[in-house]
Each structure stands twice: as C-alpha cells, then as structure tokens.
Length: 109
Length: 116
Image (tube, rainbow over all chains, first blue to last red; front, side, top):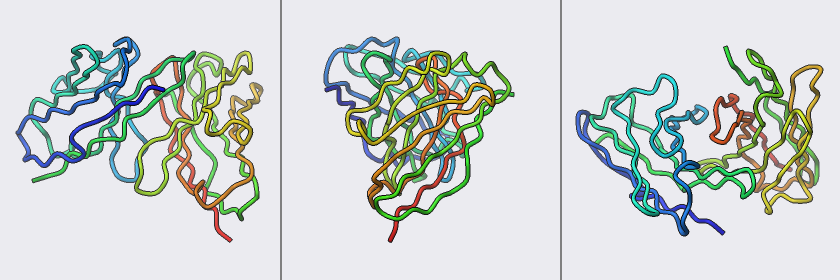
C-alpha cells in the first residue's frame, strides 16, 4: 500500500520567505499522477499542481513543483499572506486508488 | 462556471445512514468522474471512492467497502454518496470533487455529525 509522507508537519515562516514542502512516496510512482492541494480553514481544498509540476488554472507562478525519484517538492518562492494554509500531496490513479499525504501546515512565524 | 454544490449539514444517530448529494453545473456531468473525500475535525483528507457518472462504475477505498454506495441521477446532474452503519468516527466534512485524475473542482463540503 502506497504511503505518502509529508514533511515537515509544520513550517513557520515570514511573508516573503521561501517555503519548501516535501512529499515522499513509499514506492515508485509516476510523476504524472501526483497533485498538490492548498486548504485554508473552513474551505474546501484547492488544486494547485498536477502532474507534479503543472500549475492549475489561476495558480500564481510563485508555486512550483519538482520531483527526484520518490521525493516530490512543492516550493513557494515568496510567501504571500494568503499562502498560509495546509498543503496536501496526493497520488491519483483510477486503477490504484487515490492516496493523500497527512499535510504540511505553513504558518506565520 | 464549473461548480459542484452539495446538500446541507446532517445530524445522525449511531447506526443510521446518511446520503449526501452533489449537484454539478457549468459542464457536461458525464465528463468528470466524481470522487468523495472526507475530513474529520482537525484531521487530514481521506479518500473514499470514485464514480463514473456516465457508466455508473465505482471504486471504493477498502476501508469503506460494504458501507458506502456512490450513485448518480444523470437527469438532474447529481451524484450521491450514501454511508451506512454510522458511528461517531464518521463525524466529518464530506466533499465531492470532479476528477479526470486530479481533483478539481470541489464541492463546498457537507458536515455530517454522528451523535446519540
């Protein structure tokens, strides 16, 4: 069974700083099926990236994604006040089920 | 505007069932699969299953096999998720989401509270 482990659990940063969030897969997965979501309190999740690095419609270019082996990274180049939220990675595959990581909270330092 | 609108909050007793609806607008209903995801208070996201609105085919997470049923009514562009034998641990916000793989768009969520 695939497990996605996100780190750190909480990231304390100031506006303008760079955020680097990690999502490690317990087995090899295709980058084509890795997505990142942002969730703010009281709101539904919002798709940020799919295919590991393709931004969804309307997502600012300060959000980027990369992959190295089984390690996937979401980078926010310069944090804006509205970026403080919880971020989830997810593997999606219709034949294999969908799996979420446990989330990383980005909070204001 | 592509949109999924869910039914309102529910309060159920242990052992009861709940059926949550998800109405699609702004696109052809059969274009996207519908997935269901839940989130217990203060917890992360948990995937429950998917349904193809065109064929009615479904796939459920093993954890929910036997307790969850996902259906649709194409005449009113609406998907449904029914969860039976409710227990307190099922208290959560339940989301529907359109999917061609990644999940987008999402419904606004439906709070289901299970309490005696």
